[in-house]
Length: 65
Image 1 (cartoon, rainbow, N blue to C red):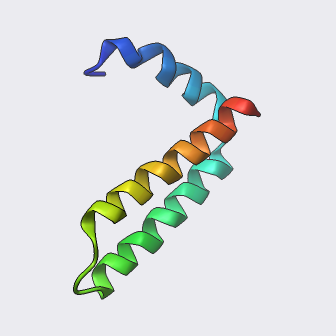
Image 2 (cartoon, one colour):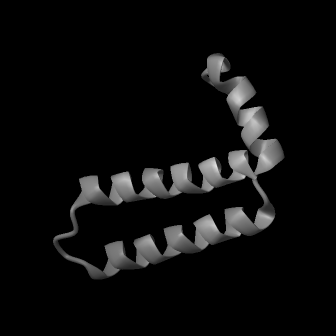
């Protein structure tokens, strides 16, 4: 871990997120990658924001569960 100040958060996340949610996130990443491969003029900023917002969504659901 490069950011030691985030170690506790990462441990909590690792303890709370399920394999099902991780695979669901991975499926979404594959879909975004497919869009990237097909699109000529894809908005990279939007793609990056989508990746992180999806991760936040899955991580937040895990923390609440």
